[in-house]
Image (cartoon, rainbow, N blue to C red; front, top):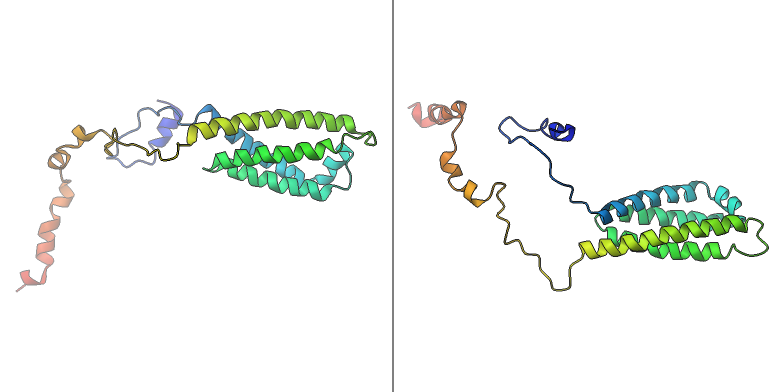
Length: 196
């Protein structure tokens, strides 16, 4: 029995079935990538929001601190959306934001900028992250979206944890705990009609 399985048994009542083993995670590789990109987005956004001067100085783009802060707020919004249930929208918003980041960085590749090598390196990193964002957005959208008009079918599900056959006769086989058998007699004694 694994550590996680034994922890899940702590909160169970004594009549609840024990967890013997846990099943495989329902998260796919695209879901794990989306989660990683969401956390990366939050970290980058906080950095852009809290230290825009450091970023603009490193890129030789002083005077654009307000724009970097706005990009940080957008990055945080994309990160929160990517970590939510609507991760497809978050990932596609990251792709759109990457386009804005590329446009901003391209404007810093002028001959006048003494730190254009830093800008070129930042641009290469953004292009690499953009590739990951596109891969994540496409694979997550393919995994979690349905075709228009397609309905989910649940014919193979019964709603019973052990199936319909195991549920048949369960009420008949139910044994009332001994401390509950005395309740009808006590209720009869306490009723006003039994005192007359």
